[in-house]
Amino acid sequence: MDSELVSVAILNYKRQETLAQTLASAEMQSYQPREIIVVDNGSGDGIGTFLREGFPEVRLVLLPNNLGTVARNRGVLAAKGSLVVTLDNDVSFDSAFELQRIVNAFERNPEADCIAFKVLDASGMRLHTRDWCHPRSHEHYQDTPFETPFITEGACAFRRQRFLQLGGYYEPLFIGHEGWDLALRLLDMGGHIFYNPTIRVRHAALKDVTRTSSRPYFYYTRNYIWVAARDYPFTSAFPYLAKYVGMMAYFSLRERHVGTFIRAIWHGLAGLPKVWRTRRPFSSATRKRLKKMSCERRGLIAAWRRHRERPQI
Image (cartoon, rainbow, N blue to C red; front, top):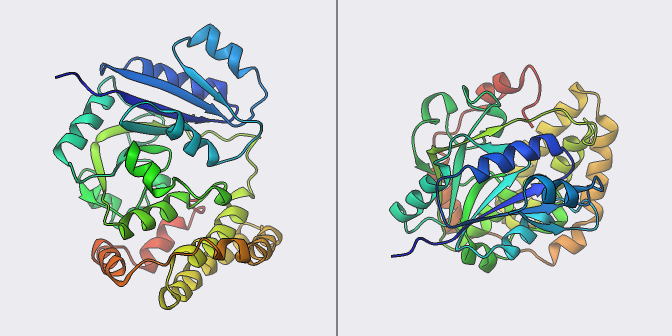
């Protein structure tokens, strides 16, 4: 029996040095057949020449400018494989056997629609805790497989047809919580997401002048409002907003981004009429599933301890 084609779709915006590391880690994979796609968000830095000279097997999809999560959707659309791995350009495979492990994981879990990877730091020695948003303690569960409601957008794999059936990521979010929005819709359709620690990637997470320090305070705050409007029933939306918009207010005040926070609230409210037209609140059955999967979520004190040095966003 022939092996199925696996696609690796990489979201790119500038940072050719880290992209080169990611591409090298993809090209060294033992699994065949595979294809590698780079979706470039209008970097304007000669990405075509860079790929032709250094990585000629890579297929390039060019977007006219930085469209954020649109690139994730375009990568899956361009893919020919039945399984699609989505990576950010600063996320590389930890070994030559990760694609094979991804295929094995889907074969062992035929009900899985998405598999989230274990994300390590650049050294590959420790968990990159900023990427851990699963509703369990990373100290106790980072090496344990479990079903999760969380999609690590730049470090996961999908069954391509399921992703397309869901309509992909909600593109107006641009960046931030697009994985949570997609996960809620996937769960509401009876789908399954699994965290698999045997599949390992490294997140370089370098500071970059193209990404301002205020960016998460704007997009995360605004997108909490939009996700609540799109996905949450009213009885769940208000506690959700109180918790997470309140958290962003605290972070913004502490990190001196109050102006950005206020602007995010304004943009979030102004965008509600458009977002409201896409509203599809999750069902009571999904609420019960979320509650069951989140029963071991850490409390507010533990969360404060995690964020006390700097916000993990």
